[in-house]
Every structure is written in structure tokens, then in C-alpha cells.
Length: 449
Image (cartoon, rainbow, N blue to C red):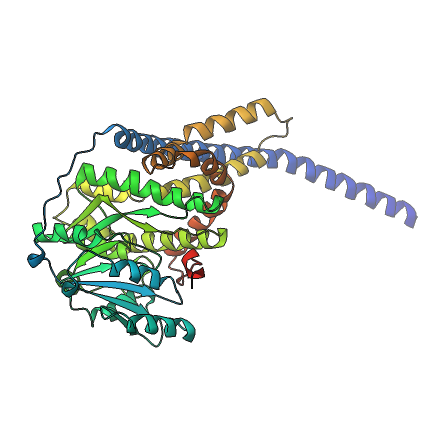
């Protein structure tokens, strides 16, 4: 009797479970179909925006490629009228700052019209000692030592400002190495127009072909300095300071509150304040300054994550003020927001395409994979969104580095995926107000003693 009851219970249980899974499969398939359509629709929408961004990069690239460059005539400079300049080199445990200072000592600028300050935030005594020894050998050089690097680089710059005598402040990151005529050429715009509050020179990379990581890093910087910034400046007369090989008018810097201490991209934040108040920033595409890019993947993605965080944070802070500014036209604001931030927009779009594409694939009705169609659609989508790659190729050509085209493509589809991920991490942290620290990077010049 008990055996029959147990058998009946088992049969009922199996029937119930079978009925439940039958219902679940029917209902679940409808749910999965709904989700598939939703993810597929989102993928197509994001793809459309990505294609439009790609077209924007193609437009910028062809504009720069085919626009005739105006020949600028160098006007002679009267040495007696040159402004007093303070060169600031902020550094943290970086021996390469000595190389930068040596380059600055070679300026063809009257020696009584400029000074060199090394802002030493180092916590390694041997580095500080070598910086002091170098300064003792050169009367133009002074080391300004802080006990700690509170506020990171902008905190260091603000501290040096207390000791700066110059009317114009010229800033170099420690791995930069300017040419002898750099100082005269970067101060010229200030002498011509009192509304000019900042001047930015173009970066030239000296370790571009060190490895595939430096190729990718150089391509990112070259695309910015040969495509994005020149297009924006030539079309609207608008540009941004880039944090190094830059000059600012000291009186304006003090007037609008100095550098924002702790900001991870103090150059962008300060540029937004200048532009919203109607000041001008000039970009000198014919004045280049040698510099380095990261040569390890960890350093590259940390750098790009910090830049992404700082740019998005600064834009969040000043978005409303920029939108309300009477000193900027609507088209100016659109160029500033869309074109300058286009690289970060594209990073977010690529991440969105990967996520929605994967979810769409996972929720698709079970069926054999059509590999021909799969690879066709993947190749089509890559081509449709390849505007940034084309811009990178053009940028390398403008920088006379066309031989790096194939290594750049290989690096973009390998290391570039990792870098894109961390760029999105930086953007997400900025939007979610998650704090981020300043990451110090290894520099090839630090190996030189």
C-alpha cells in the first residue's frame, strides 16, 4: 500500500514538474524573445550613433588632410620687450626633470628675462638631493620643495605660483624637452593680444616606436594634436590647454582662482573656466615640443583612465556655466562638447555595442550559428565604425609616422581593447562621483642618470 502511494506521489510530482517546465519554456521563450528584441534594438541604435561618430572623424580627417596650410611669417621679436617668464616643471620622484630643465637652460631667450622652477613633490630623498645638486650648478634654476604632494600636480603648480616672478607661466611635465626657440615663440601671442590667456604647443613623441604600447599611446596623442584640436581651432578658433608645453598669463590665472587643487586634468578644467569667461586660448600647430608616452600597458591604461576621469569630471562641473555663457556661440559650445569629447563618446558606444551585442546573441532563439553571416556582419560593423582608425592613419601621416600604420592597427585591436575598458571605468567613476587618485607613470627618461 505504501509502495503504491509512493509511486503515485512520484508520478504526480514528475507530471507537475513536467507541466511547470512546459509552461516555463513557453513563457520563458516569450520573455527571451522580448529581451532579444530589446537588446537587438539597443545594439542597432548604438551602432547608428557610432556610425555618425565615425563619419565625424572622417570629416575631420579629410578636412585636415586636404586643407591647405597657411604659411605663417615669423615676425622678429625685440628682446627688450620680451615679458618676464617663469618656467615651471612639476615633478614627483622623476629624475627626468633634470633633462627638461637642461633643455630650458638652452632657450635663446634673454637670461635675465626668465627663471626655471622645479616643483619637487618627491618622497624619495635621493631624487630630491640630485635635483638640489643640479639647481646649485645653475643660477636660473630653483627647486621649490613641498613636504607632501597635496592636491597632486595642480597643488604643486599653485605652490610654485607663490615663488613665480614671471608675467607668463610656461609649464612642462618633467618628460618634455623643448627646443631652444620654444620660449620666444610661445610668448609671442601674449604680446599681440591681451585677451589671450593661454597658449598651447603641439606635442611630438620621441619614443613612439619603442613597442606596440608606445605606438598606441603615440597614436592617441597624435590624433588629438593632428586631427581633433586643429580641426576645432581652425573651424571655431577654440582649443584647450593640454597640461604641458603650455603657457598661461599669470594675472588671469590669479584672477579666476588658480588651478583646481586635486583635479586630475587641471588643464581642461582651467580651459573651461577661461572659455566660459570669454578669454582666448591659442594653439600653435607649428611649434612642437618633444615628449614621451607610456611604454607599458598598465601605465597607458592608467593614464587614459585618469584623463577620461578628469575630462568628464571637469565637464560635469562646468556644463551649465558653458551652456549659459554669453561669450560662446551655440556652435562653439557644440564643437567643445561633441568634438573634443568624441573619443570618450566613442569608447562608451563601443562598450555599449559589446554588451548589447553579447546579450542579443545570448537571448537569441536556439539555432545553428551561420558563421558566414556572423563574420560578414562583424566585418561590416567594424568598417562602418572605422572612422577613428582612419583618423589615426591620417594623424600618423601628418606626424611623418606612416610606417607605424600596421603596428597601430594591431595594437588598437589588442591593447586598445584593454585601454577602452579602463577609459570607460574612468568615465563611470567620474559620473558616479567615485574618487580617483593620481597615477604616477614610468618614464623612459627616468632611467638616465
